Amino acid sequence: MRAYKFRLYPSEAQEKELNRHLWIEKNLWNTLLEKTKEKYEKEQTFLSVKEMREYAKGQGLYSQAAQSVVQNLDRSLKAKIRAKRKGLKWGFPRFKSFDRMRSILYPQSGFSLDKKLDVSPFGEIPIVRHRMMKGKIKTLCLKRELSGKWHAIFTVEQEPPTPRVNHGPAVGLDLGLNRLATLSDGKFIENPRIFRQFERKLAQEQRLLSKKRKGSHNRAKAKKRVALVHEKMANARKDYLHKTANRLLSNYSKIVMEDLGIKEMAEEGHGKGIHDASWGMFTHMLCYKAASAGSEVVLVNPKNTSKECSGCHAFVQKGLWERTHHCPSCGLVLDRDINAAINILTRATAGMAGNRRLLGAGGAPSAPRADAGSNACGDEAKLSSLKQDATRFSGW
Ligand SMILES: [Zn+2]
Image (tube, rainbow, N blue to C red; front, top):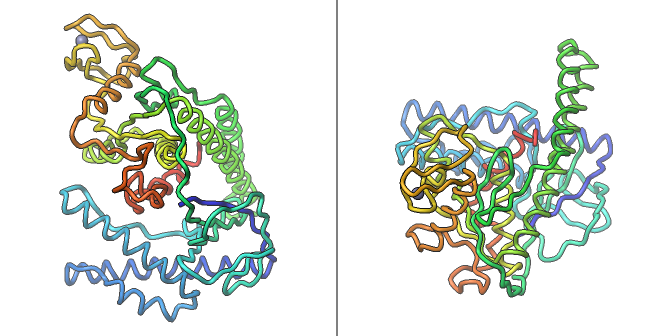
């Protein structure tokens, strides 16, 4: 699966309708959630999909859109049940404000694409297709950005790519906050300067926003300007991550990284969670691009990768602020992140059980490659949660 995003130019009347749909979606989500909570209090069970669908019918939404609201809610409730079973902290999904309800999803039908995008019930919307889509279109998402722009996002099923042969070495990759990543061979990938410029600009716009009176017209305008900077920054970041992922994949035949899913879970109980939204995005990109680059991505258990000594495997306690690894057992002195990256690489090559091998260059016959893009990094729910984070922190 691959996604294509194109700018839409709805007429004023269409935009009004689109926004009205989002409004109904938001109300539907909140009502269903409230009903589920009530039912849970009385009977300790959730509303079934069937019950939710029944309720959703009369709300004036296009059927496909209503169905996807129900599916989303059901999916996030089920994720909560899984968390509860694992003994993790859980709570109900959150009620949504209008700003948080930003997309109308067509999981199967209800649209066709020619010169314009014809989509029920909004009619023909002008679309700028700046690139060719290859493959069969599966789903459509109409998305409203915080800046007020509209986009159409298509997911497309593609023919499995012919894998290239990659003779590059294997490498361990430690994702970080200061640098984007440190490699086990001592190279590192910067977070480029341009993001700092965006951050300054963002801080400036936010300062201006904070001075505007609540509810005023000027405040709304300032809010939009903040959203625009967010958007530009997110786009620049995405572009950078794409290029970096391509470069890595053409140089290395095997890329070993920490399994962010396990990392998050391990930190959940401790209230830590030092995360960067771009980590998930970057990992996901490497995973789905790996097959066509003839490379393989392996995710390993992240436990103590920064504390283990890569020379003698002794456990060396260190705080987050300590940038250098000093091993009292074997005397190894090494940059903290390089040490971690070497450990990460070793975990894959030592064949530790539990590694998730995502995409082989030859494509393991048991792994259907058509699904690689969407499933390589875990289940759909996981991916969408990463995406949500990415939007929430679109500060990047
Ligand atoms: Zn050592």
